[in-house]
Amino acid sequence: MAVMREIRNIVILTGAGISAESGIDTFRGAGGLWENHRVEDVATPEAFARDPQLVLRFYDMRREAIQTRQPNAAHTALARLDAEWPGDLLIVTQNVDDLHERGGARRVLHMHGEHLKAWCTRCDSRHAWSDPLVDRPPCPKCGARSLRPDVVWFGEVPYHMDRIYRALREADLFVSIGTSGAVYPAAGFVQNARELGARTLELNLEPSQGSRLFHESRLGPASELVPAWVDELLAG
Ligand code: APR
Image 1 (cartoon, rainbow, N blue to C red):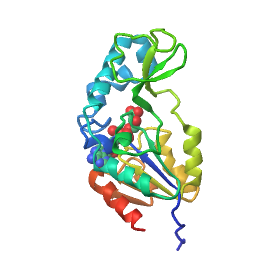
Image 2 (tube, rainbow, N blue to C red):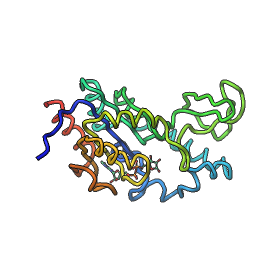
Image 3 (tube, protein in one colour):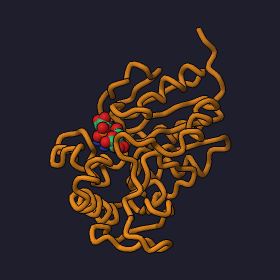
């Protein structure tokens, strides 16, 4: 039997499932976002070019909604792990909400961008943003009415990939929480980490598409599974 390597460096991937119990719709579940709005109508650069009002209204609605939601026990448990874990730790989230940060986590990367930021496509500046964009406000830096949500749309390259792959190379443990494993490159992280010798664990309501790639899979709501796993890990 292979000897388990000591866990020092951890990479945690989170998806919409970790925010579901905070009242934010997942993408592919029943009642999920794309059932009301087809993904190709809102989350592509082509859709934005074709109908910017629709896309901006849609993201304005989401930006407003997340500001009324609160982190749940899964977010705060990860924040505790972040604060107490002595080794390297990186929370890579596909989520564009800010619930990890409001839950207290610090070592967080948003690979799909953030609802609460606007990006000026004219001067390439980024700005903290909590108001609507549909009325095309001017960019605070250059004045152009060229702001869009700072979120990664289908067909665009996710953010921070170099840092993420570097962390995966160093990881002793890779944990995936609340993601369906339907969207690459995040869906491929488990394989990357595993090939490089990390132990892999999935915490999800139901088996994800890549469930069989994990050494271990625990099924249930994130608000229960994540605090229990964090307790276990911190207890050594
Ligand atoms: N606890 C744990 N897992 C849950 C919970 C919960 N309370 N509720 C739902 N889940 C699980 C579902 O079983 C599903 O496997 O969360 C997963 C959510 O999957 P998706 O809706 O596909 O969300 P995600 O994997 O984050 O989507 C990836 O797709 O459209 C894009 O850019 C968008 O970042 C998003 C990406």
